[in-house]
Image 1 (cartoon, rainbow, N blue to C red):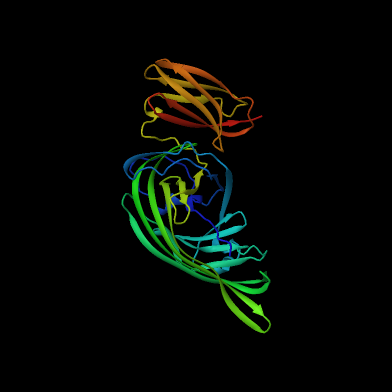
Image 2: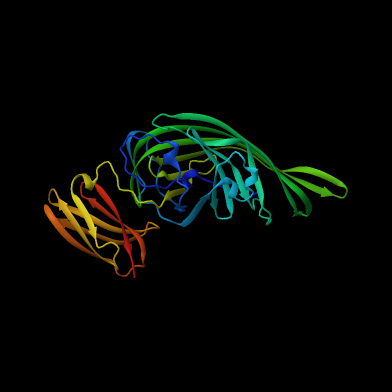
Amino acid sequence: MKKILFSLATLGLSAFSVKAQITVTSSDYIDVSSPLTQYIDTNTTITPGSAGANADWNFTALHAHDTIISTFTSASSGLLGSNYTNANVCMHLDTNYFYFDTTSTKLDFYGVAGDLLGNSVNNAQVYSNPQTIITFPSTYFTAFTDTAAYDAKFVYGALYQGYFVDSVREKETIITSSTIDGWGTVHTPHGGFYCLRQNIVKHSIDSTWAKIVVGPYHYWISLFTANTNTQSYSYVSNTAGPIVDIEYYADSNVIYQVKWNSVVGDVGVSSIENQSSVNVFPNPSQGEFSVAINAPENEDYLMKVIDMTGRIVYNETLHIAKGKNLNAISVEGISEGLYMLQITASNGSMKCLPITITK
């Protein structure tokens, strides 16, 4: 059976205004009112950084190799939703539908529906014991252990290696150990966010069988068995949900992929906003902007304009004198859409402002 790789960094998008040491509740984690855009780096050079208090996790080097868009609806409205009576949220990603139950104490994953076998037939995989993703409220040192399981049978009705396969059975037990092992600031290509770091280790006992037909006889044969451990890290804001999710290959210290949300952040350990007044206008524009900075001292400022895939389309260092300054930025040659203006002072402080190009 085709394995579905899924990360809960796909959840959560809202406005933000936070302090450094945070607590995450159920109302902070997921917003189902609008689609969620994420970017995926499948060849990253970043590392997860260190655990602990007041950490600074720099993921600005992430590069988008793929983009995914998720939409949300009620569980009853999703594909084969009647199989998920304990769920209250359905997330639609590509051709699959993921079912969750969110309460004031935890977020549980109840399974996935879609063309799971790749045979153009929709099936529902339903957990008998749901998989807990995170507990609420979560803060520094919050921890839990969870055991989830499913045992699903699907009609196949096609040949496999010369044999007619009547049906497929997929069985898995997942033991999750989760600890909030740090808090601090996450920097993505779209800005900064105060976050908790969720350190997740999953032990999976997984097996797949096929029921083949030979004349009048039916036989169950083993196709796949595995006993694996998988590491991941989720960096969770209390106002924008999960911001970054780092996933490793099973039984490996090699990163498989990194996902990050497209939401624009504007916080940091040291923020330009706390030191000087910054504004950009007109916004939207056709590519000609003015950046007004009231600087507390003479300093160099690095100006970057970044598109929603993380690509830098403008990069210039300006010397800003103490006091009020007005600087012109021209990006007329780029396509219309949403971009981020990232302003970094020589002392490392940063401010990020969304800008819109119209034609």
